[in-house]
Length: 159
Image (cartoon, rainbow, N blue to C red):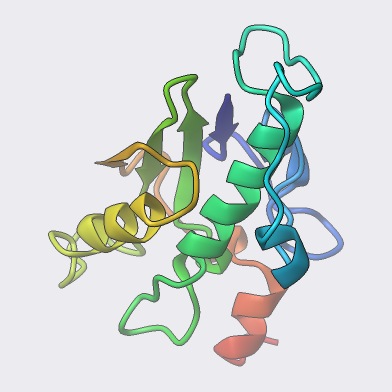
């Protein structure tokens, strides 16, 4: 399943990425109670997702956990996380639980260009259910401030 932010526009009301960016469902942050529950597999009565061996519940749980992990990675020059900054363009969860992420930087000459993808990889690899992670650094389309959520705008006093 794939989250694709390349052609996505911010939500007009909130400036946040639209939930439909996760093709398999919403990308809402996980709460503490939900984090302790195990999603049912298809074999355990979970909801079948066409084209996937993972259940809807497994994909939703992994999505929540991946977003929570991404929100732990911060751009060292901007006081907000990379997810709220809109630096994550696409997340793909394969049936073997390999997670592939396309991300960008605020600028191609970012001083942590070589380090930030490793930070993302390490954070997401620690999410429950993730077997491995591959991070691709992309610059198309170029990042701009319209990709930032309201939370990120508030953190850097952009209002």
